[in-house]
Length: 135
Image 1 (cartoon, one colour):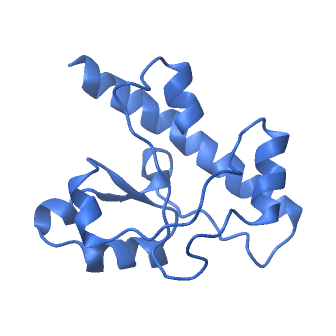
Image 2 (tube, one colour):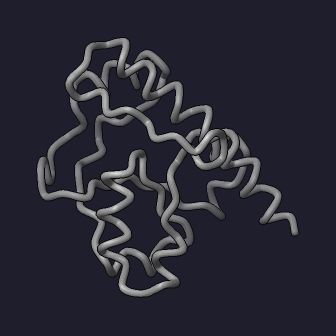
Image 3 (spheres, helix red, strand yellow):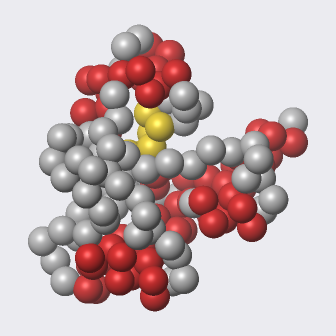
């Protein structure tokens, strides 16, 4: 998403970040399979470190995206009020509303699929955000 935002010339108006919803892997770099697929797509994710999204983070973002229903539920449970709950959406809401399957237990093809699904959703989301910024 960050690359799409930058390519659209909106990097000064849109903040993109990525966080987990559990304490697992805090401070760790992305999974090696994620790094491999990101490199294949000329994306740089190696400097990113895992951090956990907390209730206070709702104040920092206008939109909080979850890749699947497990993470969506965790975010909704963490939301301090209805306004924060309204910010939580599935990444794929802009295309088909399905979740992105977790590739963790799969092979390389599962990581390719996860990246493909995320990219498709991010393109549609950015189109929506662009329209909102223009109005």
